[in-house]
Length: 486
Image: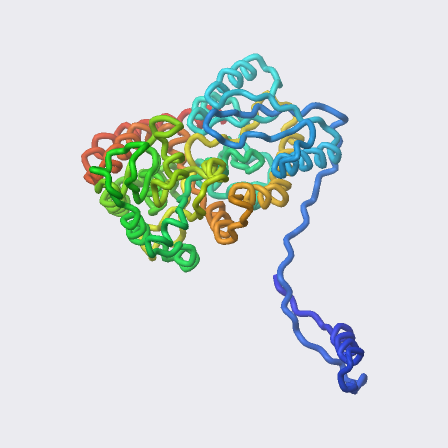
């Protein structure tokens, strides 16, 4: 809370300073106290580190690796000279010294982690104190009872900003708000996997357009505004058609991969599943808004040149490569794509996914379902210690690592893109997590709707009708299994 305070002494000191600088003498009647009220900015509370001594024990984390270009590193044996690497090294070293433990990282491909977790828990083996399994492979591990309910672990300050509040809000199930995973930027893979829009600033300027940063700030960055931008980028440039040719000259308004249409749909406020007041999942894909959003997004993706799906190979037939080579005015991509653009000739910027219209309350930035989530196996006998360590790691990442990560993600030609750094703050604060993909309730429906929208077909009513019963059955089965493991 902002509080007024008396600054008699400070004001007198200021007057004295003015006099010493050659001004006319000022007479102050010291019988009358000079007071005023000054508003001070609220201070962020200091983190209270625990009184914890691990006595040199190992703290082992099962960490995913990928072949998709994500930054998956969470620990280093020594400084490397890379600014982000070294910030993470310093983060870990400080906490290791404070709590007297040794970080041990076991790395495994993100799609091969499930057997390791299953085998360890089944054997009663405390091999991993914390794990980061992929979101879309986690459901069976939860319903088989392999993870702690984090809502019952007070050492995790899950109401604080160093934990992703959006994930917690939509994942706390039932009246007891059970929660078997949490999202933290301790693993930057989660942030790297957040989907946004990259825009070629130089190309946009040459086409007579302006970057939409101010529209974003004003809450006016909408599907209509983005579509106007997309249309600007479509040009044959002497080619016979918009059929993709890596050696061609035509340019596109938007190039992306199959998840791009879903990112637009989610960004427009559409929800496949939401939770009611009691924490039970309810269908959202039958709503009028969902249908309207799907139709609007589909209408943006039906014209050649304005949109192209391109995800054949890494090079040259890939949406990230096409954007880097100046063939598209924009792409919808995960933030990790920025690592491909550091030597890009044109300047680029980052903005969040657009709203459906200006009446939408806030932006929604889709977290790709490949994101890893933090879980604590039930074989860990020291749940409090694990929670204290992960909470502190998450806080230190929020405070020290993310500002460096922002700069690294946007470093290009030695420039610091202040506008896009501001956009990254908005993106982080509005990340949206779809629990239905985590538990697999809507996987078939997702694929069907994506397939329709990406070819410009917004007629999804029959698809929804044919999938509704299966979704309800999936939800019911999950809730029954979760009830059994309490």
